[in-house]
Image (cartoon, rainbow, N blue to C red):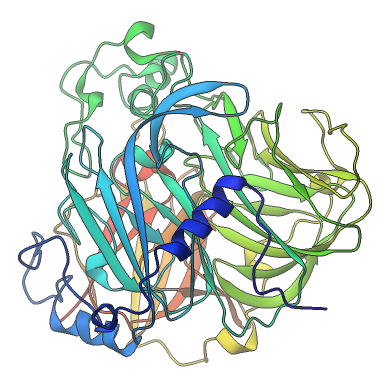
Length: 544
């Protein structure tokens, strides 16, 4: 089977973005190869917090980045702005990158330097986070921790070596902005790609509420907090004075004690959801729509190939509050990667994909038309895209449900790493135990009963093997993400798959091992956007 040098992509905007990216490359500029540079700032940013820790632009950070090398520079520009988006038959006003949903595909080769200029044309500060990428700390995009927020009307240049191949996600890291359209797929190709396949299909999933009947993510968060529609429904109205500041430092709309449908839009609180796979509630936001590659299931995007083609599908969950159970009708899938790292190949009928998780799978296309369905786990609704190899016009019904959704689902904990990325069985040098805490009634999500504070530090030292035990003391499941590192999900007998985001089920614990090999200040947080913005974030810091 031939290994293609240029993959076929699903959407024209993706392909156009790739061509634009290549056209913008500055490979011949020798000064661009000179290694890490501070851009769009006059002095290194130092966040609030205790002394004695490695700050985002300290020499240790720069030295680690130099070790990653410095290949050709790939230049990209994103403009974050208010946009009118077509979701496939329904237009909505939202915030987006380059007026598209998802944002333009960014594609580089491992070893390249990505130079991404983010132009902020919003009315609020913003940043950009390269989710899952092991990069230099001052390019991580966490406001007030690794950089100041990018002010309206200004630009910032994110510049870092993309050292490891894989499927990643770019998104804002400010307040509820990721629950709009401020996200885009990011692919780092392997120059020595070991997989053989004919075509590639990138599928970006999302849960959508912004601009529908007056709803916004901020208003939905307001409904979930004390005094909002969830609390009122439970008889938990808190009265004045119980609002809380946003974890990112801006005033939160939750401080308003009285609410009406005019103020907050339709009631989007989901009650009485349940998922057997998630051991409890599926979520708490009743999204009106679920998208695959920015389109509603009534007008799905279509990927075309030939019968017998071997197709690599890169599945990205860009949603903010929804896990998706994903299956392709009449096809088995072979899992090859999770969160950018290869695994020992595993056959499955379906996958459960938490927020910000990514899975790469291989399928051999049959003859006909087939639905790729992403069921909103524990909720009502689904996203739909279509694989077809014939020339017909008929599409699957919007409510189609492939039998594969109810067959074998391989969880991440059962995946084993490929030998090339497996961690050794070194004894941990440091043990960190963190409790995941909070309740729906109080909406007081946090770690160890504390909300996020930028001054928090869980200390590690460079060179250590760290064992991180997450103890979920809540009734909810949480997709936990560690910035700047990958970890091994540790099982009873062996080290598990390499990941950067993983689901922790309610009243369970998960043990993660990682090597402290990327100095700086790194966020650990729940990737349920409504949980993180209510306080479920903390910081791991490298001691000097």
